[in-house]
Length: 153
Image 1 (cartoon, rainbow, N blue to C red):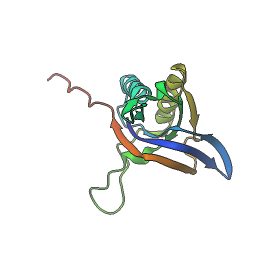
Image 2: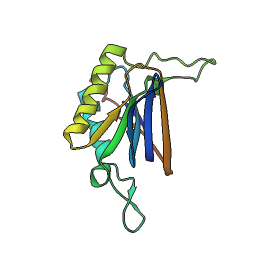
Image 3: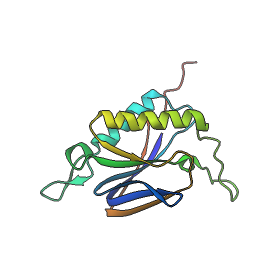
Image 4: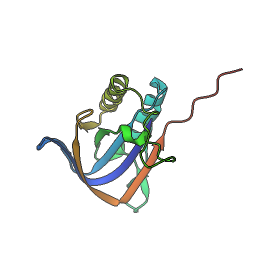
């Protein structure tokens, strides 16, 4: 799994001129699911998103996590994080998980974040979304679940 994590003062998602999610301070997460991603990747990503210390404490140091602060995030599905543009001019998305399985893993990730006591807004999977945000800092972190161990020969 891959994620672009942005610390925001506010964020929203609009689909077909209808606001489907909005929040004040917290995290906006663009989440991509790749071929071969498993429950282990989901668990790693959820843990990292909930506990990543990127909010400032009273001394102005990035020392607090989402669980320590606002507890709000919006998670937007983003298969284009798996776009490979190293060759040619059009990105290839062959490393993205197929949509039905990707949607299931994305929805399970959102539910796992809710089970941690976080307030989770979402976009609409596979919709044309308009995402608005005010980046705080700016602070933007790229996350990728650890590579799978090679199978024994």
